[in-house]
Image (cartoon, rainbow, N blue to C red; front, top):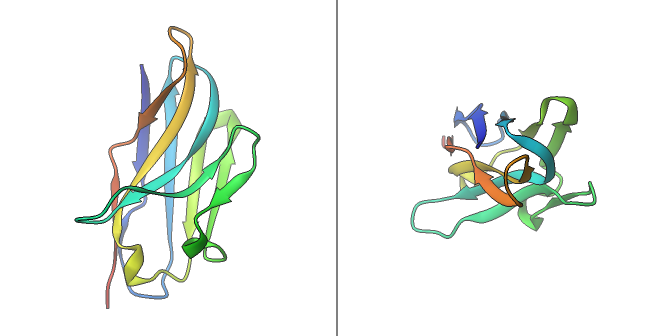
Length: 120
């Protein structure tokens, strides 16, 4: 089993900043990819930022220049620094990791989600 524990969501005004954190734990042999998705009410879940299997960070176009993904490999932790937030960023943000465990083949795991609300 793998657990992803998220924190850092909240209410912020447009132009403000938040930092999300996600720590993975459990029967982890290696993490192939790790990053963030989001889902707004009535919309599909979409990728926000992710470290690919090659270690390169990828961002959806609408957050480039505003969001930064970072990681601490020793702690199996990924962060999302969100600056210049816009109302369109309002969503539940989910941490995701593609994990090779000590008991099974690769599988994707999800955090519980953390609400980000951008409103004036």
